[in-house]
Length: 238
Ligand SMILES: C[S@@+](CC[C@H](N)C(=O)[O-])C[C@H]1O[C@@H](n2cnc3c(N)ncnc32)[C@H](O)[C@@H]1O
Image (cartoon, rainbow, N blue to C red):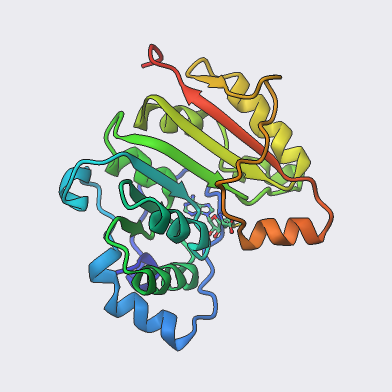
């Protein structure tokens, strides 16, 4: 059952959240998807470690998308690459419902979603070196200075991501908020776990294979420059 449907529980982990939990308006179809399709694609959050081979019923390269929004990119990639497994994390229930509907329409069998804070999921549910690729696209930029502490990309979270990635694995990010692009670049360049894949140690060219999302379209409409970052998880960093 998605998180927002469950009664609130005391949170032992008091870290600053990168999101504000909104109930959000859900369409009847999304509501139905959360009930009927959750048993197929949904993974209830618990403090137990997930066995991804059991979850996907096979061994395959695995991509994790953090903050998948409505799942447009996640389901597109999962359709294009049946040879890979896709795990998505998102806290916004209408987006999760939308993603489940798209997964059903595409007949996906290589997708699972978790509706919970990604920081906690990485900390407690994922084992070290189990993920081949992490995607974080158009994360909330929290533009006001007093909110910078809410930004998802922080030294501690980058170190957590690094520990869950396999050596040689990739962390890919994109944003249309230039100050956040610079922030992410600074945080990642300061990490000895990662190597910047950009020739000039800054941004990579927009990967053609990255599907456009709602937030990228919005950024384009506003005339924002979109920055893509790609980092390789180094072999000897853990
Ligand atoms: C600006 S939206 C971008 C959505 C999508 N990646 C896209 O490009 O369309 C950021 C999303 O990240 C989600 N999010 C933020 N912090 C999160 C966290 N700690 N765990 C899970 N989801 C999170 C939000 O709910 C929101 O849907």
